Image 1: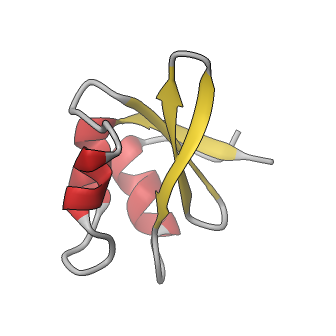
Image 2: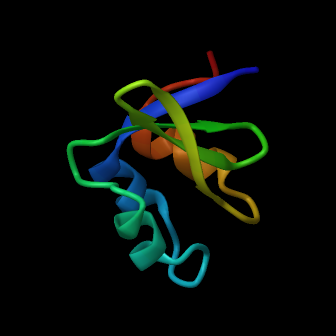
Length: 75
């Protein structure tokens, strides 16, 4: 599976209003310093101490927005 990794702060910049509940992300432990990754299906995983935890998903046409805001490609 290919992902783009980013910080929690960048994720919050990528998310469009109404796309995902930001409160739910924060309740799951997301902070600006968090390490997250998003796969091509839009599934968001948060890096926890012992592994990755699924915390939500992006909808719609997020791919271009994600690549533009991070400067990264799928890896």
